Image (cartoon, rainbow, N blue to C red; front, top):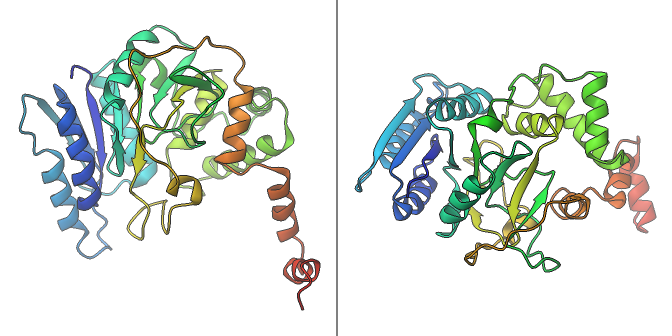
Length: 313
């Protein structure tokens, strides 16, 4: 496969080995491996990180292997974003996989074809293999367009990533808030939801890199592609995860990877609002009922009130 791959890894040998087998089957000609450093406070983590790096570079096919191995731990925010920076410093486009994402084999030619198709289209930010809302039976195309970015198995271009700003320097500001409202159709629930997230990220209360990517794409008016049928599995939920600690939520547990059929059936780009609303409801739970529950939880004595409303003691 000619399309290069960036493999983002850290400290989980078991999931890394599974994801690497998917990469091995695709046989990319160029593989980039970026690994954050171990945390000195975590016993045994240095050994796990070393094992992960060995697994992720055990290439046995014709392939150029490039590595960015950090000696110190940078954390999710800087560790991942700087790895993607490094990748696009060397490649104009490519596929990005994390160590807990298992793509169907058809994910790789799907990405390669769409990277070429939208290479010069500045309005398209990413090609995703992840579909968090289930099979979209209302369309007869291989993929859809959405404002929402899904980064469990994705591909992009240097021309899109150059807009990324890990610091979110323009948030908060009146102009950025106005553009957010415009992207989300001035609808109260999603605007409030994403305003809270962006506030937390900009203030450093969340150590992550991906919300900044969503923010920049929305500020630039870019859209994402994701498949009408899901192409990946995420096996990263568990106690050793950074953010996906605990059991997978129902929407993720229900996900199954299935192949996409070729030739791809391409949609005409238009209004994304119908798909966006499906994502909000099914993937993020942005419904009025959930909003009311969240507001109720902020009221003193809310637990007793909910019990009373349910007929409890």
